[in-house]
Amino acid sequence: MSIREDFVRPRSDRENAARRAAILDEAEKLLLEAPNQRFSISTVAQRLGVSQSTIFLHFRNREDLMTSLYTRMGRNFFETFVSRLHEGMSDRAFCEAFIDTSVAYPGFRTMRPMIMRVVEESLSQDYIHDAVREIYLYRTAAADKVEAFLELGPGQGRRLMKGFVNLMCGAVQADVAGLLAMDGLDPDVKDGVLSFDLRDAFLSGAELLVLGIRQIEP
Image 1 (cartoon, helix red, strand yellow):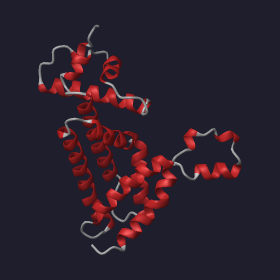
Image 2 (cartoon, rainbow, N blue to C red):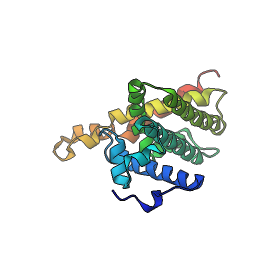
Image 3 (cartoon, helix red, strand yellow):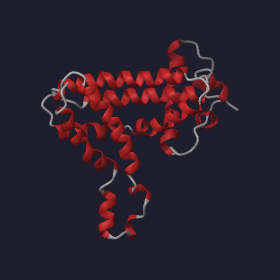
């Protein structure tokens, strides 16, 4: 097969970094287009217009590619979320900033259960461990800023961020609106289904979680 010109004979660290980023970009597009399909190196290579061996120059295997993508998504997610925080914001606005970031960066919440399956299936968990640790560091950095903006006690930001991530993933499972044909539903049933979309399902519990964290002694 013909190889993309920008993938021929890398000559510098910058070029290699650009190739690695291009692979991750294509992998992310694939993931978001078909989140329930098995993620394969061959599909990424075909879409990118390179050979599988070219992918393996930058990633050891499928698991390495997936965990690298996961850490990049996690970094983008938490950095964007923190950029939306400001002094004096209400608890409601804070909760909305989190879930709106999740809507803008769907790959992070999509990949979390996939990564857990990778952990179960992988024979070597060294790089899985590194990826999970890196995500934890991003979340912890965000949590420390959350404490300052919301005027929480020491350690409360970390508990809140952990709870928010888990609540977000639960809200994904509760969101069934996209799975049903809404036109034929009884109005009351339709209203009930819509009340469990991702955003509303998250917000219904997020404010209570913030309130509960505030009432716990640091």
